Length: 236
Length: 286
Image (cartoon, rainbow over all chains, first blue to last red; front, side, top):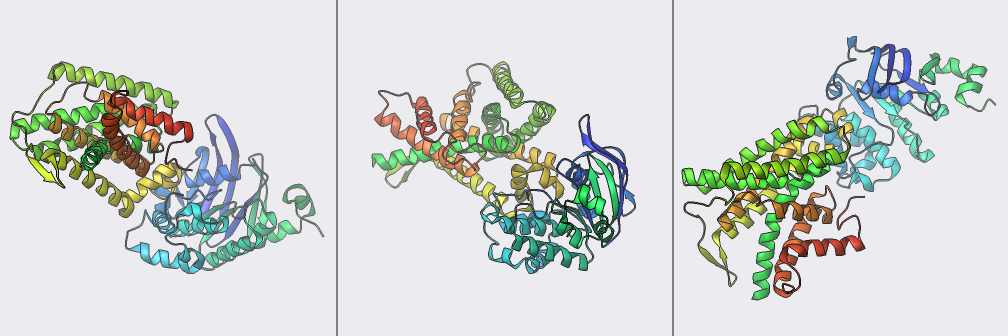
C-alpha cells in the first residue's frame, strides 16, 4: 500500500529524516515509534505532502506520489489526523466533518457523516456545537471523524493519545481497531509505546531521523535490549 | 424625531463603512496583511460607476460593472503585489500596500484629473418619507445594497462548500490543503469578493455625493483600519458591528460633540477608548 524508498525529508537546508525505508501492507496498522525530535511527525507530514522530500521516493498503491501536490493526496486516499487535532475551531462539528469530505462529490457527505456518527455517537450530540467548545477527547474523535469523511485507504494518525484521559484513549483505540477491521490501513505515530504495541502489527523505531529497528510488534516485545534502549516499557 | 433621524443616518454611514471594512478584514484574516490599498479600490469603484452610468445611462449597470471590474483588479493586485512577498515579514506587505495606495491616487489624478468627476444626470435623488424622516432614494439604495451584500456573504460562507472551505482556510491553511482545498484559489476569491464590496461602497458614495475624486479613499482607508481593529482583526461579524457602532457614534457625535471633535476624529477617539479597556478590540477571537 505505502512504500518509502530511502526517503529523506526536512525543512529548508535542514534534513530531519535520512534514508528512511519501510513498507506498509493493505489493512495493516504500522506504528512509528521514537522520542521527541526523532523525525516521526516530519515523516508523516512528508507522506501527507506538507514537508519537502529531499531525496528518495514515496510510493502509494505503487504510484510515485513524491511530487504530487498536497491538495491532490486526499483524492488518492490519504487522510491525516494531525498532532494537536488542528480542527477548524471557529466552525461547527458538522462543518468540520463537511470539510473532511471536501474532495469528494457532495452526494457522499450525508452517507459518510452517518458512518462517522455511528463510530463516534458522542459527536452526534454535539453536531451543531463549535469545535472549540468540545472536550479534548471529543476533539480527537472529531479529528479522526473528519479524516474518515475523506474515505481514506491510508489513515495517518499523529499522537492519538496525547493529552487524553485513559478512558478516552480506550475509546479512540477501539475506533482504530474497528477501522482496521473495515480494511483501512493505519500509520500510527505514538509516544505511548504500550498502546502502540497493543494494536500495531509492525513497528519502526526512529532515532535522530534514522530507523534503528523494524519488525513485528510481538518481536519488539521479546527484545529486552530494544525495550530498554528505545521503548521505555516496564519489563516485568 | 432627531433621534430616529440620527440613527438612520448612522446606520447608513455604518453600512458603507462595513462594505469597505469587511473586505479589509477578509484579507487580514486570510493573509495577515493590512491591505491599505483597499481604499484605492473603493475610489476606483466610484470612478467606474460614474463613467459607465454616464455612458450607458444605467446606474445599475454602472454598479455591477464597477463591482465586477474592481473585483478582478483586486485579484490582479494579489497576484502581482502580494503573492510574491507572502513569505516576507508582514511589514513588507504593509509598505507595498501603502505605496500602491499612493500610486493609485496619483494614477487617478493623472487619468481623471485632480478635481473629480460627477454624474451627467444624478439618479436616485428623490426623497422618500421613511418613518417621518426624509431619506434620499440613493441612501435607501445604499442601505439595501449593504444589507444584501453582507447577507449574501454570510449565506455564502455558512452554506456553500466553497464558503466553508474559505473559513477553514482562514483558520488553518495547511490543514484545509490536506482536505483538498486549493488555498491559492481561496485567496483569489477573497480578493475578488473584498474588492467588489469596496467597489459597491465606492459606487454608492459617488452617487450620494455626486462626486468622485482621487483622494476619496483617504479618510475611509484609515477609518476602515480603525474599524477592523475595533471589530477584532479578521473577524467579519465584529467588523460589521464595529462599522455600525462607528457610523452611529459619528452621526451622534457630530451633533452633540461637533464643537469639540471633528467628525473624522470620533472613530479614533472611540478606538482609543476601547483599546484602553480591551487592547484586542471589541470582538477579538481567542
